[in-house]
Image 1: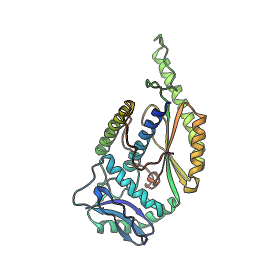
Image 2: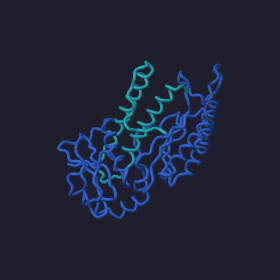
Image 3: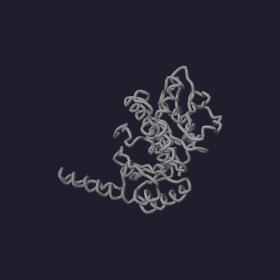
Image 4: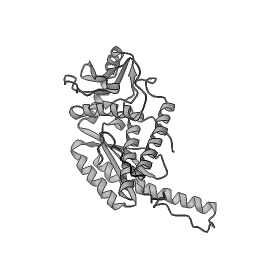
Length: 73
Length: 234
């Protein structure tokens, strides 16, 4: 795996991990207070689009600001 | 309405000056030994854009610096602070118990994926013969064998990691190239050791990308048993 692939994949993983946690984890206080499943699916669709655009931009050598505040192991 | 970020202990500790969603100031709602951290909004800021997700996450991470935290699911809105206080009172036993379970601990996320060549061909998947002479049965058997190899590898990765964790959860795989998707509740003091094991496993399985993110707030270990399943295979 090249370094660029590695960086792109790490960023992808952090975003997916973030969405996984915030939208599927955590304490739920009330049934009608959270996002509907349809909303969550929209987030996943948007996320995939974003990841694709990040990967494409990096392929073309464009600088992408690092994911905010998320240290990688 | 109010947007709620987290429930934490040490209600007497001053709140961080960090801002919440839509740059709203953070406020605390105290009930007994519990503090809910919220912000007031006239309009629902719940659009789950990535910057909103990060804004919510950063508030929870900041709280986690000096107290135990139960992160609330993104999208938790309540009509007012009275409802929040009543909720804290009604479920205080449960919240205090889970706070005790996560005290001094953080969540680490590990995902393992088969590596791909630049052309997108997964390395770990056996390439089908070009002759095209394979039957459907052979193809299915090969798929099955690959599935068994992946599960074996997932177990080999998960076992040493879960041995370092207080608790662990394996999530459902969401794409064909995923081998393992898991969350580990780890003592803060064991985070470095955990990462060293991740690194060792990466060397041991060079054809698999073993990626670890965190420390996260303990999102995967505060639910009441089952986690709602969202999203699907892509």
